[in-house]
Image 1 (cartoon, rainbow, N blue to C red):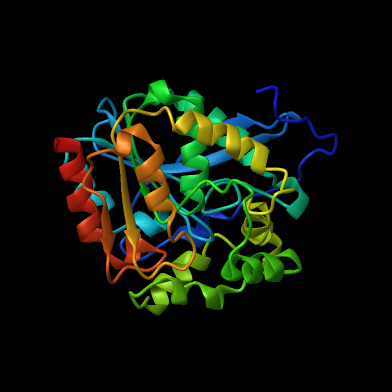
Image 2: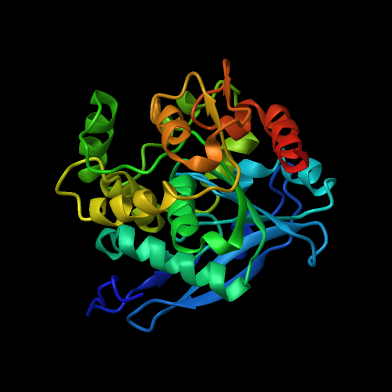
Length: 308
């Protein structure tokens, strides 16, 4: 992808030890790995989990920050009963995927490039995408670049920022994280109406044995292209113009309590052709991490969407 600039400094890669992922609650899934190459030649290992038949049309589940595929543990078994191939992928810097060690290693262009290479390497087609938060921003970019690979999209508590300015919440969040040396894990629980157990909290922390591993999740907020001069904004604007021509089914399911992406569902419904006439939903009790708060509703709506 020629729009991604090659960087001269080679990446230093951290890899979370496997023993951090032993005996996690409700998460018995075997790991699967795909190697992609950064433009500097560094190999990056991206992790995903799978359920269901390998030759079936896939449902691709993409998480946000600072979570990982553990976020989908309540949805995976039920979705697998649909007869589809269920894939939950960990973004680079998250979960069991490799973690470049420096904050400056992470750019929006690089995230788009890494996940584009992962998608092509796995040759996924006829995809139903369910995407939330950063999984949505990156996932929607993939839809814009590879529309022929996607059969339908469900966007949940996400959006594609176009450099149009910051909300008060976003200004606070980006400003705080720009100077952070470690991730403020106390911010995780307020993003859920569902109360996590200690074992669940520890599972979200499992990929990060120390702050050294947290560069990616610390940098994510800085990459949100809300400021007009953010280097990611032109990429997103080009992607948005392509999405405004996407005429395959496009559904929004948002949480009423989410402070991050309020209003983007209405924008998508008004602008994306495939969103016309869909059964869009706002879930009253759901916060930002909607997969924790309303997994049964999400599964039911995904299956209904598949069957329409």
